[in-house]
Length: 210
Image 1 (cartoon, rainbow, N blue to C red):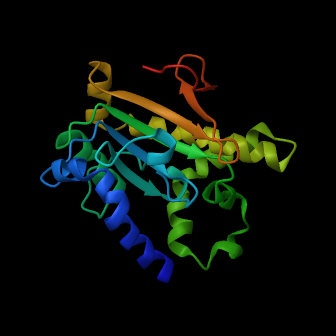
Image 2: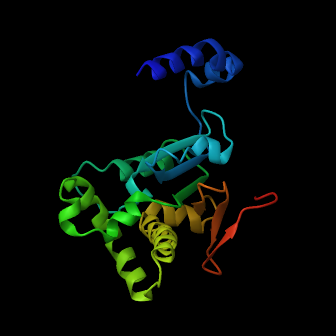
């Protein structure tokens, strides 16, 4: 904890001063242009990956960057409520679902049930990705490495499908008022691949992207 307290002091005395005017503007309101739905993995840092400043991203993070399909029920739904807020209140222009390499949540889909019993809430949460696991197993990858990257990428595709079950997402997207992206981030290389809806493939982001 000492390191964290030291970091808080350094932020106030150094980093904050470098962006003092920005933080003063952000003191009253936020106007992020993008909703970033990513994994809770500590190695995935949205602002670093996107080279953005505070105030630009509205961030939702959970295990395996999952998006529950839309439903109108009286429950406590963190990711669903964040999507609703981003669209209706913040009026974001973009939504990114970002998965990554070596995802622990995705690899947990293949654990024996008894090995994940110590985390019952995680086990329940990952039920959302069981169709991903089933599709990958049907493809019969011949190595664990291939199974891993197939799972991580197909998971992003499934979560994009879930996202479009949200009526407002679908309506704004079809009206050209909202852009939706699926990203796959390679931790060890820094590369980010973006999902091409037409080809169904992930393409390396390079050059200037609109």
